[in-house]
Image (tube, rainbow, N blue to C red; front, side):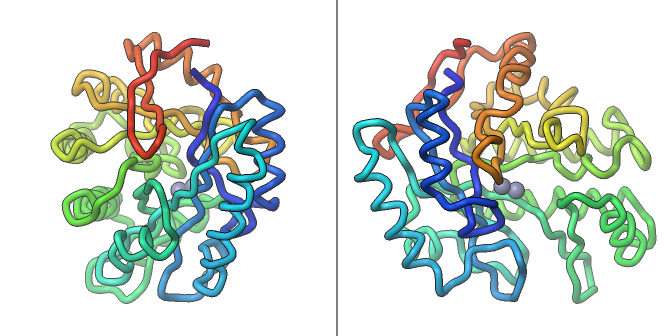
Length: 282
Ligand SMILES: [Zn+2]
Ligand SMILES: [Zn+2]
């Protein structure tokens, strides 16, 4: 079914609205469940992640909403964890602190080797991506992308979490300019990462944000990578990575059509703290 979404951001991280406005919209859309996944606190100042001093408010606010709307929708409290080697706190620490029911593990900031800085690969501007590629990796796209996937692999190997967020988002600002998805060196990195995901029994998120924000004309992941996810029989979940209430189900219909065509028959569904498979009906 397409009536739930566990990847969304409210004003507690970098979303635009208060949590209750997402809940009301979700009910209006006929959702059966939803999960808030604010960006986890980081040990440095930044404009996008949950502030440590707001953790208690986040817990209380979601608890109140759970109760208030308990007869209409099931609400979960999660976190989107940022993994940065040597910098981010162990995922379990924030899971406990925020009383999170599930975790999404993502890489948005890549740590370049031997440089005390971070390459921001996400966000709206491809110029930031290009500048980091040049400043931190001397324009070597293979080294830059390899560093991204190795950071992802390190996260999978060392942290406990449920869903890997937008696994191939590194391709977003590339837009086929520096490399093509079918190049063997790139697919080698994808294979390494997907094999690890399968081994650790992690769910792969199919993220629609690139499409509706018009930053990338496809899903994260899409194309060859998405077909490989199917071939490896890795469980998937559909999410829009909403930062506004009206983004809660954007791109879902198109994405469901595509994943069905590729041969996926089921999506993961979260209920009572457990993951189950649900058939894709729409
Ligand atoms: Zn993300
Ligand atoms: Zn997100």
